[in-house]
Image (tube, rainbow, N blue to C red; front, top):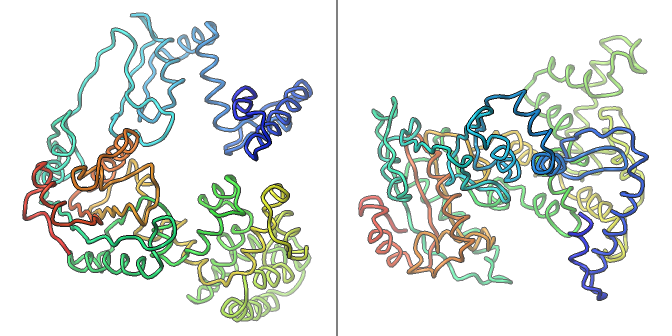
Length: 498
């Protein structure tokens, strides 16, 4: 890790070089103090805390890879304890683990390793991808598809030619469909070749029109797949929240916690405040009491109000919730948190309590001077927001919406799948689905765009158990149709233009 960090130090006074030097110094200090750490434990977090003995997921993978590679006794002990080792989703297993298992199982005797997976469904970086067994191992191609309708399978076979799948279960008797609708993509008029707000509104309207044309607007069993979360946030109306937690003031850890629903600023809303308001609006008084007794200091059965009469506490809870709803509708997020904190409705973490107690930062944020404190600017931005986006965010986090990122549905299946490809709105140059599907019209993708795109597209397409609809934004719909027909991906009756 120290050597890797040092590679970014060019010796100059650039921001990147200074950060690299700071990281090297920090890691060397931690290394010197490691002998004082008496116990290490695994903590399922994105970042390590070595001096407190906490190892992250990445540390475990690196350590396991090292032990497999360098320690014969480790390989021997693994083989003695596990004579048969089966690895599911092998394409997404980390490369050092597959290499280590192959090294352990290299001899023709036990232990024996078996991998199950599909290289076309490898969508995460640093994974085994085109995995292979130890030398002399046997590869068995699986052609049976037990999920998709024959129509979807026919399309999958046209999309990938390395294997011809067949319907092998009850799905063989299901009637399905595959359709693609080509939408005229506008020339982006915003900064950095992005859509303006008006163009975004028209792109959303185009999607709604396509859904209406397919008669899917009111179906509750359609999953809508988008490349990036911001595209979903716009449609569910929590865009400002999304931009804040992925913007200037958000560290990678803050963004990760936001995306998992674990950020300390958001947890009181996800766990207590939103459920309270929802239960109250639905007239579920029993649920309100259960939430309060479990989460609220003022209503803790062993707390300061334990000796008060039940009726008093019920009346108090009703009055407080009525006031909370009034504040929710008109005030800021900070006003809501302060009210809930002062009335014992939430038990804020120490970090959140400290953020609420301090005065707002009034100076302009400077990345070099304030990078260690950027969380305060993040909190201030969050505190100043109105509350109306929080329920939409909560519904998405709880998977109570028909929306998902394309990476997020791996391993899932749905009767009806809508895949939306809009390279301009997605604004992620690692992918270009217009170039992937129609390189003659849109231009050839880079090697990385092609590899990442074809695998992610295949994952999306193969989630459909019955019906698959694809919405592709393209600057040249007619030429795109002709290229798709020429490639044999679709028939004429499967393509429409709007």
